[in-house]
Length: 279
Image 1 (cartoon, helix red, strand yellow):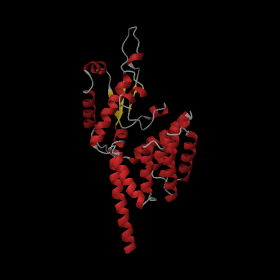
Image 2 (cartoon, one colour; image 1 turned 90 degrees about the vertical axis):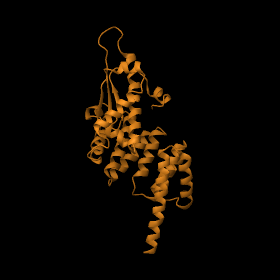
Image 3 (cartoon, rainbow, N blue to C red; image 1 turned 120 degrees about the vertical axis):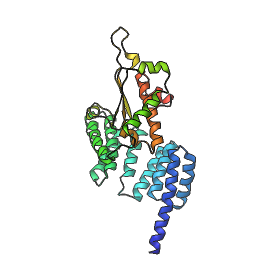
């Protein structure tokens, strides 16, 4: 009994330190997170939570090779956990541009079964992205339609922020724009939905996208007369909530997404938005 109490006490200490480290990561305080990690690595190098943190910190340090190696050790420490396999697949896809290897890993983990709803949704979302990268758009749509259903099943019945409050935050973000921009946007509706529709996903839209501009961007509109094409800005509340740990972070995500999609309306591409801090 004493040994079990000691084990629980040690695990509680590790978990508390990991909570501190992840909070520091969320606040972009990577040096602080790194110091906690170094302490944990000295005493608990094979703890799955410590290895998960190592993957995150190595990626933040632009060390994908080290992150993959940490994923391997994480998998060896807890072979029943699908998380290190999913993390490795994401690294292959995003850091090494190897969607074929990502597809192989993700299909293996899905075929193995035993996943929670959230784990299956994450694996299928990544698999959809990898298939899309390989130009298998039908396969990507199939996986992403499954993600729509799984995400809806995993979420609370009610959103974190009321619809009215959500719209107020979006309106406040719009008021940050210059007056001449607001004049252009006067007739551009901003629609709030939980997530993209099935029709959007079938058209290739990521089911977890935070916002979307549909229509003709201002630079591409005809100058030969006719009615201006206003387009529509969509905000997806449940997806935004998933990306935000609290209401303050959610409000910030809404603001950034509104500005991001407004920039698309004016013809800026993703590289432009990255330079503007709206990527």
